[in-house]
Length: 282
Image (tube, rainbow, N blue to C red; front, side, top):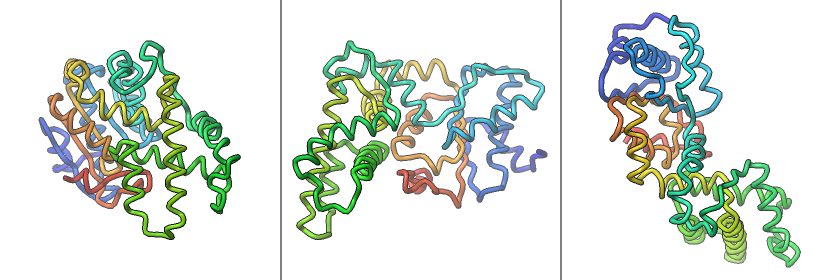
C-alpha cells in the first residue's frame, strides 16, 4: 500500500502518535509500516509489543513482515490484552499469588478455559439450585452459569473488584423489589466460585484480569521487566480496549520510548464486552 504524505508523517513520528479516523482510512497500514520501519532501523523484534483487539487481527501484522524483505521475526509479540495478562500473571505468579489472596501461593496456577470455568460454576450453583435458589427465574441453569461468568468477567475488565461489582448491581437495581434476592443469590454464587479459585490456584478470565490489573501492572519488578524488554508500543483499535486494558496501556506508555495508537472513530463495537471507547480518547 502506498502511503499518503500524512500517513508517512505518522509512520515516521517519534515518541507518541495518535491516529484518529474512520474505518478504512489506513490507520492499521500506518502501524504496520511503522513496525517495518523500526525493524529496518535495527530495532530488535523482541523490544516491540503490538496490541490488537482480537487475536484474529494478529495475522495482518505477521503478513506485513512476511511480505517485506525483512525475513522472519519469531520474537515479535503481537497479542491481545487478555492473552498478555494471562501470560504475565503465570510468569510472575510468585510475586502476586499471596497478595492476591490465593491460599496456596506455592502451587502453580491452572488456567481455566471458558468451558472449564462453566463446569466449575455449574458445580458451584448445583447445591444452590437443589435448595431452591434462582427458583422463579425464567432461565435455564446453563444461562444462569453464563450470566454469572459474564458478570465476573465484565467486572474485572471494568476495573471493579467482585465486591464493588456486587454493590453496584444491588444499588442500581430498579426492578421488582421481590427479585432483589436473585442478586443476593448471584452474589453468593460468585463469591463461592471465587473462593474455590483462590483455594485451588485456579485462574478464570476474571481473576487473571483482576490480578494483572491490581497486583502486577504496578509492581516494581514487573515495570522493570517491561522497561528493559519493550521499547516500542503499537496499539491498533485502542477504542476496543476495556478500562483494564487502557490502564495497562497507560502504564506501558510511561516506560516505552515510543507509542503509536490507532483509534477508529466509528468503533466501540465491543461495548457489550466492556470496551470503553470514550476512555480511550481521554
